[in-house]
Structure formats: C-alpha cells, structure tokens
Amino acid sequence: MSVTGTTGESSLQRIANEVETVGVLPIEDSQRRMKASQLFIVWAMASASATTPVLGLLLYKMGFANLMGAIVLAFLIGLVPAGLFSEMGREIPVTALIVARRTYGRVGALIFAIFFTFVNVGWFGLNTEVGGQILSAIFNMKGEFWFWFIGVLQIVLVLFGMKWLEYFYRYTSLLLVICYGALTIYLFTHYHVRVPQQSGPILWGPSLSLILTFSILSWTYKISTVSRFAVPSDQTRGKTRYFLAPSIGIMLSVLLMGAVGMLSQAATGNWNVAAFGSQIPVWGVVAAFGVALAVVHTNALNLYPSTIDLLVALNTVKKPARWEEPVATVVLGVLSTVLAIYGILDKISGFLDITGDLIFPFTFIMLVDWIWIQRKRTPVAEFYERPTTPAGWFVIPAVVAWAVGFALNFWGANFLPAFFYNTLPLPVVGSLVAAAVYWVIAPKAGKQAAGAIPAEPTA
Image 1 (cartoon, rainbow, N blue to C red):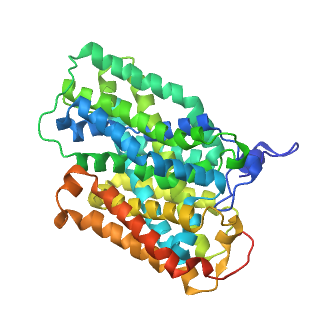
Image 2 (tube, rainbow, N blue to C red):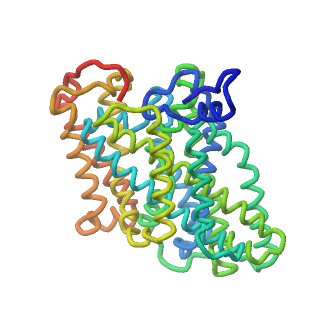
Image 3 (cartoon, rainbow, N blue to C red):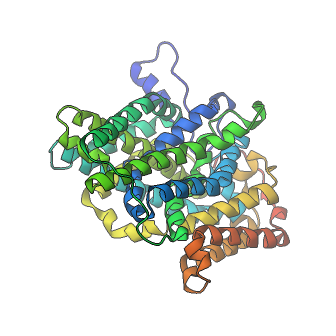
C-alpha cells in the first residue's frame, strides 16, 4: 500500500500515492494495524447486502423462529473455518490464494484464482443490478445512470485499497443502520406485521446449505485477504476476538436482515424493505442511501478480492507491475457494471448457484493443509518461490480430494441416503469428506519434500 506523499508533492501526487499497489505481495508490518472491532465492522457491512433480506422470502415456509435458529446453526457451522482463515491472514500477511500455491500447486492455485475472479465479478454485477433497479424505482429514473453511479463509486473505493475501505465501512456503518432502521420502523408503523409460522415440512439440509452459501462459507476464503491488514498474531495477547470478529459480523447482519426480509414479506408480500422508499415522501432519500450503502459495502468486498485473485493468476505467469492492481480493479469493475446493465447475469445464475459446491471443499482442504501439513510454519518467501518439481506446480492429492468433495456436493443427492442432504447440509458433508481424504493421502505424497529455487517474494 502506498504511503502519503511528502511535503512539496501536488494534491494529485498525494492522491496517487494513496492508491493501493501492493498486489499479492506480503503486507508490511507498518500497514498491519486493523483491530478486531474494525474486522467486525468490515464484515458486518459487507454481509449487509441489499439482497440479504431475500432469505426471508426463500425460506419463508420455515417460519420466523426456525429461520432464526437456522441462521444461528449456520453460524456455528461456519465459525471455525472463518476463524481459522482470519488467523491465517494475521499469521502470514498474504491472501489465501497465495497460500493455496502450497496446497494445490502453482497451476492449481492459478485455476482456482481464475474461477474465483469470475465468481466475484458475477456477484458484483448481480448486486449492482439489484441496487440499480431499486434506486431507479425510488427516484423514478429509468436508464443506466444508477448502475454506473453504483459501479463507479465502488471502483473508486477499491482503487484506494483496504486502508480506505476500512475507513469507509467504519464511518458509514451507523448511517446504514439508521437507514434500514428507518425503513423497518416504517414497516411496523404502516403495515400489520405478523410473525410467520412454519407452513410446511422443513428440509434442514437444503435450508442450511442456502444460508451457508449465501453468507459465511462463501466469504470464508476471502477473510484472510482482509485480516492480512490486521495486527499480527504474535503482537496480540488474546486471539479469540480476532478469531470471532469476521463470523459474528457476517452472521449478525444475516440474522437481522433475514428477519426484516421475512417480516416484510409477511406484511406486504415484498421481502425488499428498500422498495418502501418510493412510497415515503421524505424518507425515500433515506431508503436510497441505505440501498446504495448496502450495495457498495458488499460489492467492495466482491471487487477487491476479485482483483487480488486475478493478480494471483497473472503473477503466476508474469512478473508483477506496480500499477496492475488499480488497472485490474478498473477493468473488472467496468466489466461487472456492463454485465449488470445488460442483465447477462440472469443467464448464468446456475453457475453462481454451484459456487458453494466448488468453494467449500477448496476451503476445507486449505485449512487441513495449512494446519496439519504445513503446520503453519511455511516461511512467507516460500509461497513466491519457483517450483522445480511437478509436485510444486500441481499437487495431485489436493486436486483429487477436491474432486471427491465436489462430486459429493454436486451429485451426492442422487446416491447418498436422504439424511445426508435433507437433514445435513450436503456441501458441508462433501467438503468434510474431501478434507478427510486429503488428510489421509497428502502426507503419503511427500508434497513437502518438493524442491524450489529460492526467490524474493516478487510474484
């Protein structure tokens, strides 16, 4: 991350110096200052998406009490993986896909980096589309203006990196709470709000899978991308608060916004409380701010990891350049906004639906590798060394284990007993099996014996 310009520099130079250009290199200790409370705010705001209340519609038949219970249970399921990734970023200040170079090999990490880049671009475009449509309705303005307004705002924020993103989250969090609080008050004062009861049989497995895919386990591998800016692990007395902060932030937002979405659906037939903005003469502006903030908060942590993931892929085959991070941010942000405008994402919604099947086993295998295979001892420089053996480029045990997990997640409902997909969240079951397979076969592969040519961390 660039430092502030010195005396004598022009304003433009000082602004340029604040643009983040660190790319995928390790974060310097001087930049690792984020506290647990700031981690909490970042992830709470990132999770408070304008689309999060849709859980109240998708899981409406569960009833209010069961929805709240399912969200709490999802929190407990995702708590440990999210906490471990939070600590990973504090232990070594690099993004998760750099660590994945040792887990999956350089080529394996490259493939996942490309995939995750486009997954994040997809979510960025989807949220921009939702936010643009809501703001267009509130202000009765048709056209592309609000899509570009949201898209450009997000691009500018991400250009200045995590330092300024954290400031933005911190100082706008109260405003977002006030905005959605006002909309919720409007709901309760202008409509008859009733608490929905269970209206059909509950399939806990699919319900938990939906919540986990929509929230904590989809965010988990990205957590270290933020926590690499947090206070280093060896400089704090207690780790619990840093361990818990991201997962509590993510799931608290899901709990509150999911509850409002279900109550709004019951009272008005519409889960989206932001839609009330067009009905409120004065407070419609409040609704607009709330929607814009919710979209920008979420999408900043879709675009930022997307940029870093793309750089992991690019820097596998080329040396990094100073300005490639901001250039990648602009290119991916514009591409995502164009996708939102033309509604292309509607045609690839099925692709986004299977992201949990792909991401969950990747995440669980990485944790097994980091904790039990690498034993959290790999020096940072080794993640940037050029492999000299095939095992350094492509780690077959990790890829095989991931393929087993994905197969179980995607096809398991066709051959497993119903308990494993109706009662349990199948993507978690498949991912745990993948992690177990990797734990068994990885040591036998002797992957840690692979040689490498020492190098400075420059790619």
